[in-house]
Image 1 (cartoon, rainbow, N blue to C red):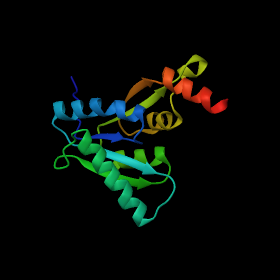
Image 2: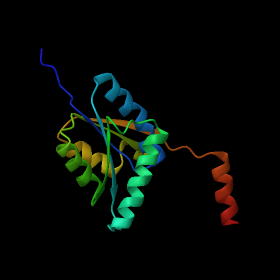
Image 3: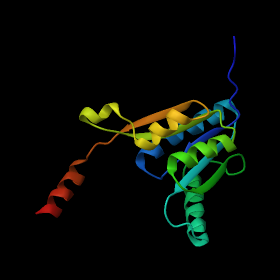
Image 4: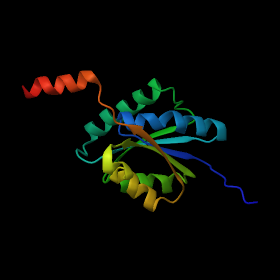
Length: 150
């Protein structure tokens, strides 16, 4: 029987609720396998050094809030196309697994994942574990939206 050896896990985040839902899965798997978690945030716009420092600080705070140990795990900010940069980060980290979140949709679109997730799954150099979150609208959000349109 062949065994798969996972030497690291890549967790891409955009700080959204859906990507956040995947973090506990990524942490659990990394802890159980005893491997580092590589966290990546991809910025498509401003590539300035000041913006990089702001984003890196935000990413580090995000990981502190979610108790991801910076001594055994890494955090990186990259620039470019989200899917392309996630795939490149996976290759560079020799990731054996990518753990990422995606939005749940209602109706016909429920059969489709987000475009970034689809691209990553199609081209990943390793398995991709996708955590799907339902996008549910709370009564407060619906009421706020109606109030804005009145």
